[in-house]
Length: 118
Image (cartoon, rainbow, N blue to C red; front, side):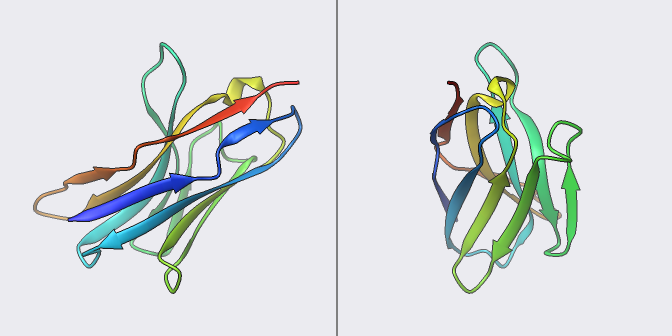
């Protein structure tokens, strides 16, 4: 079992920055990928950034020039650094951990709200 707890969300002005944190606990030896997703009202949850096998980084088109994902193994935390935000990025952001083969099971945090508004 893996537990994920997000923090760092809140209200930010357009053009501003925010850092989200995902505190990780439990048995993580089977985790293949760490990721951040977002879900805006009325929309499906979508991936914005991921770390695959602890070294390969992936970003969605929306996050490519605005988001940076990293993981501090010593601190058991996965971060999402967000820059140049605009109201389109208002959403609930979720931390995700995915096991590798054969289960490909996914763990989710409870989410943290990010609101971009003046």
